[in-house]
Length: 341
Image (tube, rainbow, N blue to C red; front, side, top):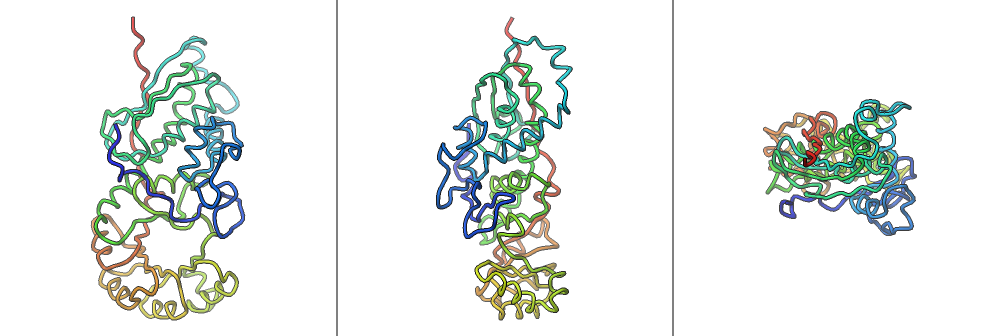
């Protein structure tokens, strides 16, 4: 059974740009986030079932990219060969039902991605029964997804599906802890680009499932002027102006280490200011100084124990790279049902 609607992922609030696609004032050609022209069945040119492809697209994921990731995961596991243990122990015509089950409490993300892995492996049609949805809170022992398929296919797909499902659910669970701490403040927890190569879109999706919001998806869809850019440009205001001159329509965030730099970039016209390693007291001063003329994001020094103190200063975002680079997995298993005698 599913938990209340508010635990589901919030609508995507930033453009999702497909990796390798050109930056544009909107989504990339295949991002599937439901922008100006959402996916229709004819646009989903992949080998996944069209209904599954649409579910992925509705979640702001590119079905083609998800299918590619599923292929890479399975091909890595088989390494050009076959699942020798399964072929040796399971009759070719055997069919089984397996339950993906939470071993501990948490927040789920990646169920449709696990289905995509099964779709890549299964040689015949398979049936799924969805017990929960991505973004739901679950308890230990709760069934998430039941699959009936050829037993060989189910076992061959098991680890690849679980690797992705456990990883993404771990990110969603960690994000949910931050979102719960920030509830009632005006601040949102959001991710960074500190993601696993090749899995950025999926990991940022997991953040949304946990109640967080996404920072930029790539180097091309928004600008973030950091300390090394400042050194190269000769100053924080100079760096901001250089980006504005080259990309006048792009949103620009600027990292500030001091209140003096906050004044500089505010006067220059920054859209968002990143307060790097500010104390809560210094953050409150920055909020008062800016007075709503730009969005503010706290970064550094942040842990769950002080998150609410920072949020109550009035900042808009808390940037937490650990959501994607350090979250432990959520323990989920696949158990075949016993065959009745």
